[in-house]
Length: 248
Image 1 (spheres, helix red, strand yellow):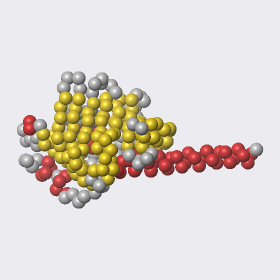
Image 2: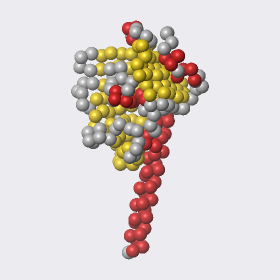
Image 3: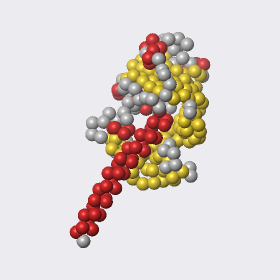
Image 4: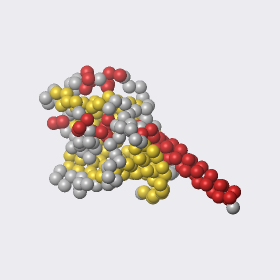
């Protein structure tokens, strides 16, 4: 009987350890497939709320979680406006006034360009695998795909803003299916839905992302990837103030 109990506790301990390792690997694969070491592409963003619908077309360059440049191409009144991110710092350039504005830490949870994405979403330098404890907490079927449900809770000194995340990853191909964001009080405040899985830039990925506000009825933002390329060589000058303030 004692031997049986020891075997049971050893089995439970191994199971939890393995689940933790598996959860970290699953998250890493899901994140890497949509980011790559570098990326360049054109994206259409549509902001929807009860009062209006607004669409922006943007060209963007990314270098992992460290650097990014986003240039608005349309509509014409906003064309040429840019956002530059280096590390955890961020600047907006407004073409009409030819001014560069640094975004202070106090505004990182503010809306980016009127969308349901925050400034922090753009400058997030954290790595989910490094900054959160991960644990597989269940399974769920989303759009016909069986998914792992992984709970992510921030490590004590991690530079993150969310109380926890519930990250859903498709079992068939390790693609992200859904992410639910919770505040520090454990209240869900928004949900990201991934869809329109297709081959793009030499890899299979969700080409449509939809961020849905859970606190503002009728508010959501849709991202549609029009074209993407990954793991390409990018010149350092792309992520510079010279490029940020260069007229188009």
